[in-house]
Image 1 (cartoon, rainbow, N blue to C red):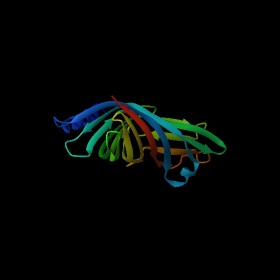
Image 2 (spheres, rainbow, N blue to C red):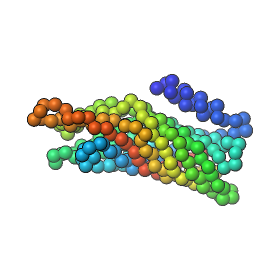
Image 3 (tube, helix red, strand yellow):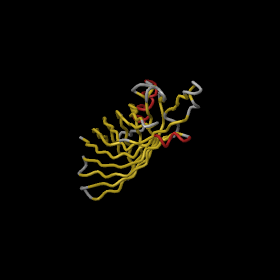
Image 4 (spheres, rainbow, N blue to C red):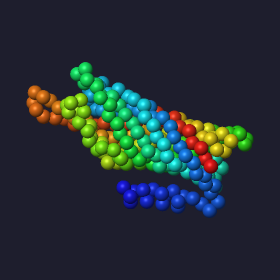
Length: 205
């Protein structure tokens, strides 16, 4: 994980020309999480809200309208599992590092509208596995995952930034198993994917 983080921040640093305008800030927002699973188990998953927060950086590039942003966010997502009239909430906690390319159009000195897209690298910070619903269901998270962002936003008075985006998984986030009491074995593993609509605000100093 440390090697990956070093490479990511090195890539950001190398992309910064000497004339680049760099701004640091703090970002936070709401996850409207969608956890899906292959097979019929998706019918037992009910989505819940989560949040993310952390430092962010914005780098102006020497091309009109183009810029780069990167963040290091503590991210929490959750879903409710409902099986046989019982329910329990499962949560994922991770470090998420989105790196986005942005293209903006200025509206004078008051505001700037922009669209953005880019990859996001996640590293699990919580429990990697958890038995739930009296140990009849097992939820196992991967140590790392990759997703992508597509969204739009606005910057007001050069300091306050508001965005909305969709973060979608590019691979499986975890695996789900259900205990078969009759056969006394775990059913076949189903792949789980965590995606989210995200609404955020950031303040740049």
